[in-house]
Image (cartoon, rainbow, N blue to C red; front, top):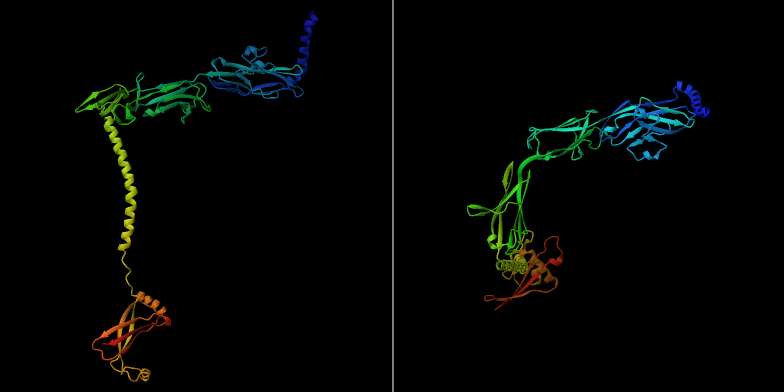
Length: 457
């Protein structure tokens, strides 16, 4: 009985003696890179760790313990042979070679304390890294300083937000969960405006989400941008439903009052944002406006004119409007083409003829032969008609080019022009030839001869 009880002890002693040289040579070791770590509540933290052992051995089991008393016998928060720890807040991010790091998610105050690593090999070797890493958990404390401790924050005030923790002085600020550029432990909001209202929080630097509690900054201000809206229209038929709505921006909430202008006085209608008329009457016509107010001020809207028309008059007005529109369209269809035609016709009538330019007018010498004397006849002419006496008279005639073109056309058609002239004092038949010589460079076809027969009466 005693031998059976003492045999396992002798075996452990033998193994200890077997591995004693390795221990003396520092072949067994667990090292924590940070002996003391600070983490903020709600954050995640990693305890870095490495270990080593004789080369001929294989690591079969790794464990982490929380608390000095549990370093050897447990209970263990991490046990590689126990899968029940897989879904907990503690995660082993190391391996079975040399990395033994531990990560803790959503750190809480109860997670503070000492953490130690232990491993076992295939030859029965066991090693625990004593004097484990110590984790300190700090709360994030966010506070606000205002000009009046219990008074409201008004536009123009100065507000300071402070984020304190025992781990680091460098923090990140968030407004409505969106990061800000400020990294100091105090956020200064000077000359504050209503746009600075929001939910503020903080976290240690390099954290991408807020970890502190939320502080609400509520900036109060008087009414502004007061206006109204009307549905369906400011001009309706009798019996229609109409809603007037007053709109404004302010903090805190506003008080609304609707007024109707009655001569030199104003009649209070309702004390709410909407003024409703169910089945309007002509007596509801008039001018209206709303007044909004809170403890920081008041403001009036502009004046709205509401017109309620009688049903018959309203229908007549609608019919008249439609008739006018139809007449306008018909008039446009008829009048526009007539005006266009008139303008085109008038343009044709009023277009002046093109004046004859100097280029179109040529001076042509015309030789007129009259029977007054034969002194001016050429020798050839006298030989042909010795019995006739002719006198040549020179005259200058201006002939228009266009007329000349007409004459040319007649000449090409070989149609001679005859004229009969009766002279009372003529004593004999005269033969007169009027010729217009062709300008230099022109063809012979441009020549024109006009024959005139003068009969003596």
